[in-house]
Image (spheres, each protein chain N blue to C red):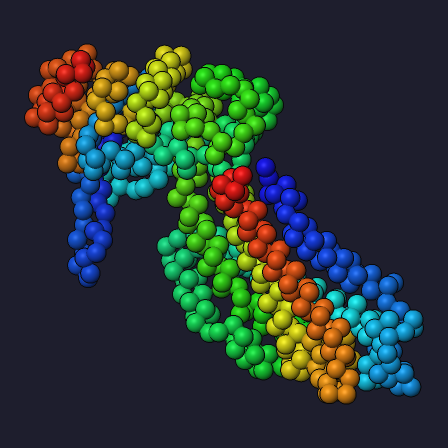
Length: 252
Length: 278
């Protein structure tokens, strides 16, 4: 199993309550697993806990209770042993690239950091081609790029080390609709060519259905339904059905 | 366009940099440039006017004012730079530690900072020098003690700001070392803000060192130092007011140059503002 999330709970302190110690329970015993090479979508409304799950899997936060394993090892341990093998594309592309560095340095960061010093220039050019960006962009700075271009740069950087696990954390949510379609096509191409395990977190069921093999519905901090994309119309859970029916007119 | 290129296009910054470079050069080569020894007395020539032998005249003991001014750079400017370097080093190290480690380490460092920040710096410097006695080392130490907390707090805030950026999160998730993150993302990001504050503070440290010497708490006679020169000139201010001009103008120009340079650096590091201006 590539990724295993077991009975994970996470809560945050509520702000503005004076001396009362109230907590907001965001995740209430989330469990799921993803096999190697599988592409799984995680959908849910705003505030359902999607990004919290993402941060926990990425090792940026710790769960209050429960555990997360990647290939049978705890996240921090796995990251230490598998440098560059987990990658992420964030929703906010504007803060995803260091504004002080040129695009070539942004894309080549991991290659340099992990000692692949030879032929970085060629590798960066290959990555730019792969994500459909002109080579001339390499010498530009992030603020000189459009949102779609910058997100492509982030994707190029994310796949630069050919990671085994790729988390797409609302990676298309901040883009306008036409760009979303282009980026979705790019993800589809990457999925086919690179054979990596992908967790696609989104609130857009249509996008998830387009890319993923399996969909998980997150509601009130719990996975309420997991179903293969091909059987999507067979969902049983009430929340999942409502979410599905809301997009059926768009031919999911 | 990089910071250096943006700075190159700023005329005021280049003038200030050029001026400060010349001042530093004059300080380094003071023994070669100075026409006389800064402590060589010639009582017969006291209060002499401008001449070929004494280009800026002499003081009440017949010492060459130009020579004392040039040697004074070594104390006033070099000591201020040394003080700032030490302050930045301590402040940055503690700030990075607090910002990265968080938890108890952060709490302890920040509470100590709070204590140090609750005293006005000038009063604290006077108190420390008062307790430890006058002298160069004590002046430097007092300045570092009074200022490190400002840098620690600022660097900690910067570290917290940057650790929240997605590019730092990405590096963490990918397994990059803390050293790589600090070197690649945090230090270059913080360098701008630190250099702006440091440049502005260098001006204030020059003023403090000069003020302490003026009050008799800093450098002791017969060492040539600009504040000390002002102190000596004040005794004859009514009869020979021009005695105060050379050290006074020197302090004014160097402090102004550091302040202008600080403003220009602020603009040069502010990429968004520069892009809007274009």
